[in-house]
Image (cartoon, rainbow, N blue to C red):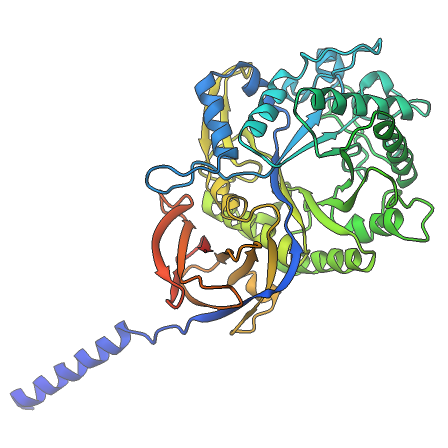
Length: 527
């Protein structure tokens, strides 16, 4: 069969057109997010983290330049000469008031010496304010950086006040380890700690007397992992009223924060003796109501652990928290979280990359703020031993300490910066803005797509945090209403790229299409 040169040329031309059409798929239409600055949701009060356990060794023994760098990463609000944030600008810092297990040493029954904590009060009732020197170093450093909220919390009463002489339970009865006749003494101790630091110009805005009261915290001596005690709701009420009296008698202004629930479910439901804590402590007809105590805060705190195994649970639990808090006219703070459970693996096996962990952290923060209506968001430990490259589930800064924890190496993680996409730019006093999206995705659907939230201050600044959870770039556009004369967008991006650690990108016009990199968190500042 003979084919003319003209026919061959036509075939190749057609094939070229076909190739071109395959290589150039139709451009994805940008999702338009409408942001009306007058459509405001909750006030944002702080973003914070704790310095539990490992603060003591770092603050007390590590070389100055190392601990100063760690503090800068956590607290700094400055930028370098290239416009990169030097730190994530935390606006809250959680300080653990120890129970005296460190002084007990091996006889404390706590396996890891780093998780034993000193007590300022001696068994004879006198005080040694040189205790917890490493912890206090970080509190002072937070203060010097201008961290707006200092929070003191206790995992156990001092061991000389406990029923078994330990900083944890040895009996699984879900009742407090505090001796029945030591409620006033424990409250007085906490008030004395607050008073001392007030005199040192380290004012704690909040004092938390109980932590995760739902867990039994029981173990055999020598097998315990940390300090802790359960509390029944009636015991929480008793210690809270005692602390209120102690703060009042010493003329202190710190507010009491409750209840640091071990899971968010316990705020509105749950079984056991420390359940339905919004209803029990803020219900008008409850015999345990604490709302009108002089020194009580105007929120309830709970922990997001174990409530993110699947997007459906993630969304539904937070919706229940928000609905119940609204019904009882109380604000909600998320006061502890790390990836204790395996929800962060999202059905995968093996190690998860640093950016996967960072994105999962951002997803939990987003849903706590947008669905749960949280007014504050606080991480558990800022630093722990681990790798910065994979399974960064417990920390923002990975540590590689020596055996005695007197020195070591330290590494920033992608999680540090993805948290910073929120904490560095959403400042205390800003308000979240309700937004609308043109693709009409629900919160549940958005959890695997693009998650989007916006915030504003009283001067017209708007901050947007967009999480692209997909493996491809996503175009978006912003439709701003009632936001003044803003015309430029500054972007800060955290992604898998080595240098994308809150990295600043060139300004764009407010009318431009914004491209969100695959698997990234982007903060947009519109000022």
